[in-house]
Image (spheres, rainbow, N blue to C red):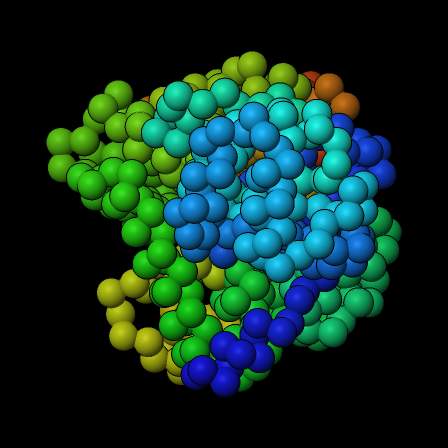
Length: 453
């Protein structure tokens, strides 16, 4: 296993965020620091160091989770920057070059005073600055410091499906699929089955770089699962540090069962005995700020201004990475490669995997820059609800999306939505594992084409 980890450390993946970082360097000219926010283990530190290595003459990296106390103490008094820069260069054995070097503040949440110093450091103008961090907005992390306005903030998510294909050495499939999406021409059943099998591998492995590394090194899904469990345990440590009651961790672990229950909202009382939403606002804030989850809010009025009509008391939680979601869903089961991973990979798992597909759709929509909204309304009998899984706002209208885990000619909710809100609809989509087809104004798309919406 040690050899595997050594190989993993040498692999750097191509990530789309790199282009955003280039734009920052080109357009800001050192007038702001670049802050990369994201969940733990999504690759923030790796991409920051890769960027520094490629785009500057040299760089200095301070990992505040490991830095000795005398480095932390430097930021208690920033009145003498010459002294601070000399100390950093001596301690990190780096000769910085004005206007040609960058200083990376890694895990900036571990030293809030360094983040507060950004205003002064940027104003000084000698070097560029990149910050990486998670859990940056939690009140405990911001107390008694001034958050600098001189930051360009970008969010980093798990590897999307195209980045995953790049990691596998495939640069061609996604552009070809995009052309097919644009034409809405069927691929053919055999080709679609192959594309879905490739896609399910992404669903299982996920987009956490370490898990992808393990898969590339071993092709062993058992080892991949072990890695994902270690990442989830790291998340739990963070949750318990911020919330010793364990309720934040419980809410996170409850995501698969909540989605599998088909409830129209996340029901905190079914996860935490006696739990009430108004008593758990801090726990929900921790989950949101950790970027380990994606929140979908209920849109009370499904119209173009979705964000103006949300009910913050009605929401669903999705895991930010579906690979982690799969491991979380089987958290209490001993890993059995043939039973869980191989059967899901080959679409042979008897259990309904609709909630897994719903989670991957949420992840892909977020990766494409969308916010998550859904809509429910009661049936005529009032005993059940119709539900639109996701809503996109486009051209002053909405695009309702329904997610299916199998080929089904029954799509009552999206049909009823059409009857109720026909004048507001631009296009209806049903995402499923089968090929492209069109049924009147309803477009069926294979799940892997979610990224093109």
